[in-house]
Length: 474
Image 1 (cartoon, helix red, strand yellow):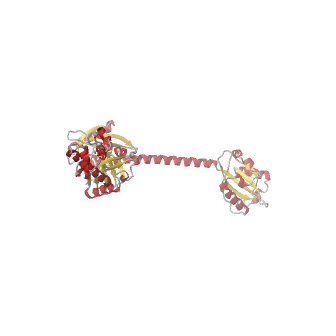
Image 2: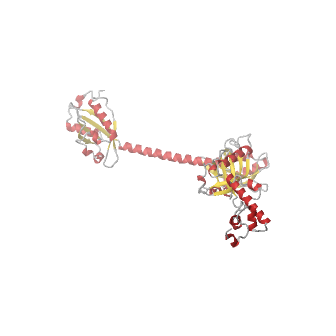
Image 3: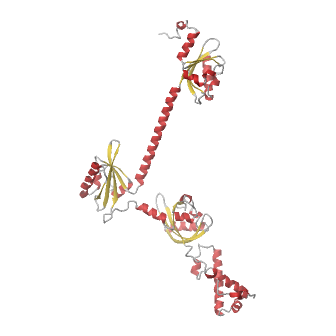
């Protein structure tokens, strides 16, 4: 069978009007373009294109009526048509008055000997709309999938990290389908895998029937019930409660196991959380660091000592930033923890963010672990226990060598030497006054001081009632 191209005489009687009608019927838009690429005529088979500015294309270069990224495609179409190359269809966008580009699929052919070409175009807006709907549907599905994945992650995190023993059981077969680590620890049968076993096998023979009856009641009524049951191979009783829920086409039990005291009362299921809450609220500072002294977590009492507002501001920082007058204190603490495992009542100083200094005692312990070894510290403010202002505004000095050595770690050596000098001076003055029966003139002569110098030192240490005599010149 011959094609129209192989039998051109079949269309020899078609005039220009008929040819134009044929072009308009064959395409949504037909452009007559001269050899220079200028549009000489436009034929529209789709009335909607008339509202997109196509009536102004005549007399303009074809490349001037398309968007920037489509201009190379127009040049390629014109070149292929002039060279009678294999006809190709190219996606070209026209800017529209509405602001949304109009997609047209074009193919061009050369007609006549003067280089004129005819470009046939098919309106792709309907296809583009379908594609946009498809993309929107895919994005919506992706968002739903992502939301479900996040929900599953949160569920799995709560399920696996919760301290309460929880199991998911098939309501028809009573086979365990899921069990969190707490349930595995409570049932405590390392020789057998919990998942895939019958739930009733976990209990002693004298309580299996009671558990089975309880589950049957929950299946029939849908309401949760509580029961005390004994584990297989032991005398440890558990509180067993169950709830019924549906998933897809099946029915499942959510079973909770609670350890019981000897008197049958349930133990707190979250005792670890109670301990953490207690440590978070104690008035002494409590911190946990890694083995280099970098803070992992801290309670609010420690945060207040640092003069900061939130735990997040201290987490990740080195304890050395606030502890001691130099890095020596922190090095001593860590060295003792590594060597002995614990430190008791280590005297040092806490420096606040804004310059305050507090005398503290630190006790610490090493927490060995194969994966995450760490150190735990308690920090107690002992400033009120240390020496305070004595009567007369003077400072009460250490009265013994043990008290002086107790200042090591709290004060630099220079200050300790100064304290020692003051102590000796005060003791000598007190001895001179005792020997002279509080005769200030004799005491001054005995000490080799002027009376005025003696009065200055008496006033400094708050010794005796000086009265107006102290103001007289020596």
